[in-house]
Image 1 (cartoon, helix red, strand yellow):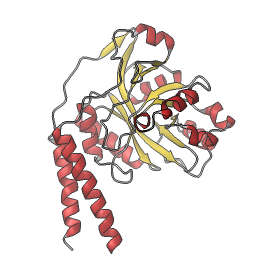
Image 2 (cartoon, rainbow, N blue to C red; image 1 turned 90 degrees about the vertical axis):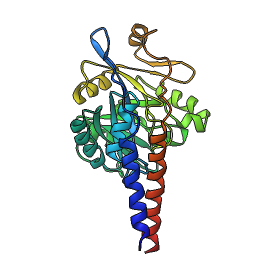
Image 3 (cartoon, helix red, strand yellow; image 1 turned 90 degrees about the horizontal axis):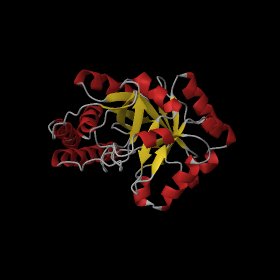
Image 4 (cartoon, rainbow, N blue to C red; image 1 turned 60 degrees about the vertical axis):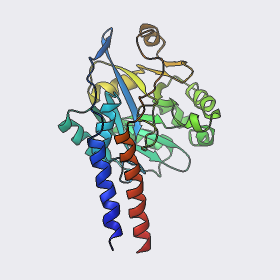
Length: 286
């Protein structure tokens, strides 16, 4: 009977540790030409319902600590976690949070950014993109490695806005880097670097530099639609708008890495994972 309270206590400890971790460092906004350059991560998961270690509250704090100006909070086949994160960020003076969904299906994964109602995971990729566009959102192919290519047929590719060209899957499976580049080269797609954050590797370890007119949700979505992004991989190869790459040469960090997590963040993640698994196991025993 006591075990659920133990696991709940660990989740609360995770939230407290995240809130008390190293404070963020303020920095002046970076402007290049007419644009404000934003450090962004468009694939960030939170718990509950997304197999992550941090709550929406802690995720906003961690994003700020990692120097992110904006990020998409992606629920797995849900949008409500992203809406909760946006509500919290606005009250914490945190980074701009864009509500998002990872449309998680057996044949493709897609990040739907800037939507307000959930996308049906039973849709084909083309149908999902049509729904995203009806809501004013942007469709990003999530880790489109070769095993998912059959889900991206001609109809879907014609409508797709963007694709992750750099993300942590390449650290676990090096050949994925080639597959992501091949997919991105299929057509002119907005280049995206994302961490696919679940609480283990640092948030923003792979990130996107967005050239937006201001740091607002609508301005970021407009920049994504227009393809105004730059991404650097671990080998310092650049992707994105060639003119923006030229303008920002020597200005942007040529590696989209984040600083390592501090002890508070690591403790928060450990408590979060343990508490979440404990509650799941306690539920099975009943």
